[in-house]
Amino acid sequence: MLFFRLVMLLSSILLIGSGVIYLNSSKAALYSYIIAYITTSIILLSSFKSYQRVVKKRLDNYIVDEFDERDFIDKIDDPFSLYDEVDNENLNIKEIIKKEKELLKKSKRSFKNSFKDSILAFNPIRLIAYALFVGGFFYLLKSNNLSLIFYLATIILPNIIIVLYLLNFNKVK
Image (cartoon, rainbow, N blue to C red; front, side, top):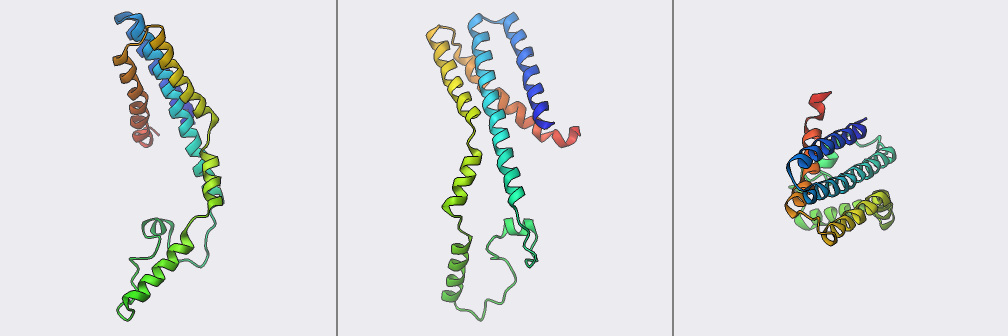
């Protein structure tokens, strides 16, 4: 539902912006706006879907440890239990460092886990969108239809729209 709303929002702003630029500016400005806006929007939406897939996969693989009394947020804030109330006065510094090194060795991610996450983040649509972005720029440059001001301003526009929408998403519900 959120993805569909983002697509509809970006599409409507594309149409409105194209109409305004068509009435007030040159053909080069219109072409630059349309190509930059569409390719940037595709990059952002495919990145959004890709990261959404990574988060969903991690949540599906999350196993609850029954014997750990710490909650999920505490594990994120203090993954190595550095701020737990433990009587460290009786331990010397060397023992504390050894314990922390052991905890770090246990918590390291394996190459296999990192590879799985990178495969999940890989999205061919995003690569195609980047290729379209670069190809569109070179097309505009070669055909003398590049208006650099409109092109650069339009690259920023979908980012701002998505950030503002996501910031206000909970208020809209």
